[in-house]
Image (cartoon, rainbow, N blue to C red; front, side):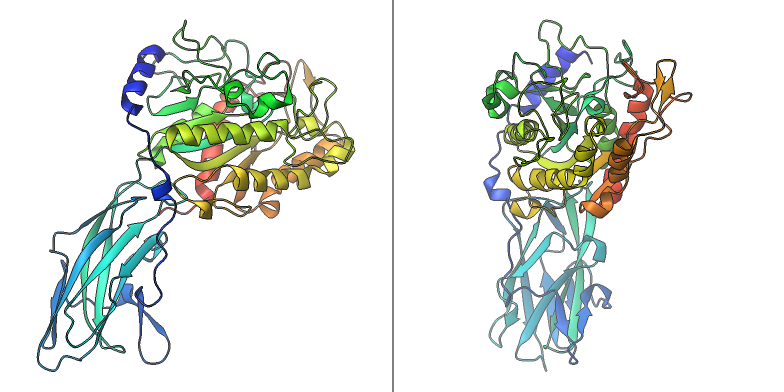
Amino acid sequence: MAPLASIRLFRARHLVRVLTVAGLLTVLAACDSDLRTDIDNGNDTPVDLGNLPLSGANGSASNEQLSLQVGNGAGITLQEGASNPIRVPISIERKSGAPASIQLSAVIQEADKRKYTALTFSDATLGASETSSTLSLQLAIAARPIQPQSRTLIVTASDGATPLLSTAIDISVSPTELPDVYLLVGQSNMVGFSEDNSKRAAAGEPDAPDDRILQLNVTGNDRSHYATAADFTDPASNHVTGMPLTPALDPLHDGFDTTLGGKSGQRIGPGLSFAKLALNDTSADIYLVPAAWADTGFCKRDSNPLPGLGWNATPKNNSALSGTLLYDRAVQRANIALTETGGVLRGILWHQGEADSDDLACAQAYADNLSELASALRTNIQPDARGTTARGASADVPFIVGTLSRGSDVRGDLLPFGEAKQLVDDTLRDVASLIPLSDVVINDDLVPPGYACGEGSCIHFGALAYREMGRRYYQAITGLLPEN
């Protein structure tokens, strides 16, 4: 589909996506007295209800003492992230010899799918005269996108020590409809400085747009948009307010040109190829938030004279270090995208380090600065539908980095790395020990002769390398989070 036609379809499809996120913020906290996911077997050892033998199926079970009915036997439909819980009626019929008090417990049978699920009884203990309760089910949005799936709910009636009846009922789970949002940060290799005219975006070609991959329609990285420090946190300077969201097209960091119905730039980066693979894991749309800027880092750059243009998350006393403007802008752009889409922040992709490799003092501070940046982004980007539990230094929002180019061609050889550059590259390779829920993409082989270098010199990767790099970012981000 042509980009202009694609954006018309996008506008129609997303016109109704004005969502109230406040009602989706967190899974309900269960009351201690009424949430029963295990039972006491008399020796203080919890019994895993998921492993108990069933005495009934389809929500029904019966013996000489009791009859247990969960729902109507037709199964349960549960949507991830729904603001209101599903309420399932439960009834007990006592027979001869039934205990006066019946305790109810519930659990998801599949142990690997219990996380994010809240199971709450209106009354978990039914006295002699009580015959009914209600089980409320709610599924919070997982850290990793899920696909439509089924789960099994086990409900057990007990006399307080011995399971008397247990029955299973099917749950049909549908994923949240909220889109997945990914933040792209760093310097030129995240922007994408592939060879001239290397974009292949015709239908069927590797850089062609996809109807399910969109982006924040950002403004260009230039002084016309960022003349002052205040511009970096001004929404009007950060994106096209009249057309905030567009199909994702390379170059991702260029704005959408309505006169062309697309973009004239002919270079690519790793973001679009990453998103195309990420579609495999989700039924939702994907939004990319481009926020990188070439020739930038935590250090001051003589070649980039705008005061404060840096990735530091907080102001620094070190005279070698720059300011916070790019960090501030990344937070602002992520917040705009989350507000415009109602989406869920699923990951942060970082490729940077060359700008911090020219100064040993900067390189020595790189590990601390990178750790602080990851923590600050996870903490200070506004909460989404997952709520405040998905924010904070150790939040389960993956942070993926990439190693620096080791390439050479007729224009020059980047090896051997100097002391400063080796220190930065070693920090990137060791990121998992520095930052929770992080991983590194190793790019050592994405250089000549197998992969051409990019624009200017081999400090930049080529188009073929960027496409493979995007695949590796995808593998790294999915490797950090278990499937749900």
